[in-house]
Length: 346
Ligand SMILES: Cc1cc2nc3c(=O)[nH]c(=O)nc-3n(C[C@H](O)[C@H](O)[C@H](O)COP(=O)(O)O)c2cc1C
Image (tube, rainbow, N blue to C red; front, side, top):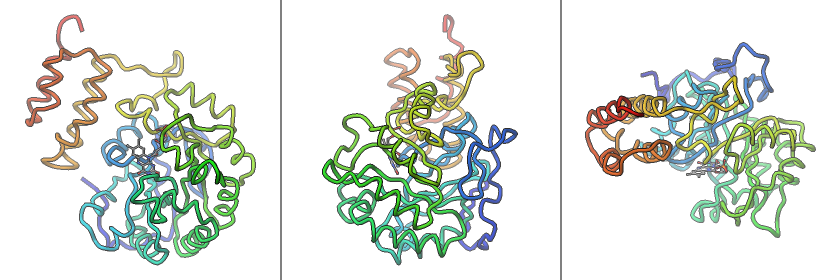
């Protein structure tokens, strides 16, 4: 497996090389992230625990124009923590690859980003949206929204020293009293970021209430860099409607893609491909095999959260479901899938 983990690889001087691999690369690009053509409007959002190598590649194959990695701690990179470096792995078929980082120390962020750049990602994104207390209250993630000028200086320095485009993913502000998204977008654009992704909630909202797409539209209307909208999109038609409403360059889909990589896949009939039972079971097996290849012995255990969501899509006897979600033998898992697939009446 070509996982591109060699830290000592030579630095790339040509950002975006290899970035045109896409299911729709014959079409004209929908937009560019600086000089990187993007072929499509739907993307897999960064999700810790979900947007790992196997899931990113699966979503790319089914039509996502790119997929963010899970967020990666710049402190962890600097400390050389093995599990953090493991998360940086990607395969060339995924390109364009957007590696997402978080941190609060400007020197550590730059140091780690430069190390990571040697792995030749296409884009480096900085997380400014994580609402988890241990991260946001230390000034990382959404904590970066509290001090736009400091954040602008950090981003300006990253942009100056890195060869790859640098982007940012924000929320609308820290809380209802400080929805500073227009100021943030302006500061980010002035600092040279190549794209802004916006989750339409404040840090205080967490995942409560509804994403505010009007605010996302306001950012789009005032920005000269591509803007991606994000929040509560659960179908292609909804994504289309949000784009029509706001004019954003593309849509990030997070929870709506959990157990549903087909959300990115179009169908000639009505625009949304709907997998039948066999397609779900075939995808489950292929996904599990890739998880085994990617994670080795831990593959099956880490696959369970995906399996549970896939199984929600098809009728499965309770006992069979239990066996699938608690078993420890990948071969038995595949055998059960094959039985289910070929069961009469399915
Ligand atoms: C399990 C989970 C993990 C997430 N991890 C990240 C992350 O690593 N980086 C990030 O920027 N956002 C992360 N998010 C936020 C999503 O990228 C997205 O902004 C949010 O879920 C709203 O989009 P949705 O309604 O389409 O899910 C995560 C969300 C979930 C549910």
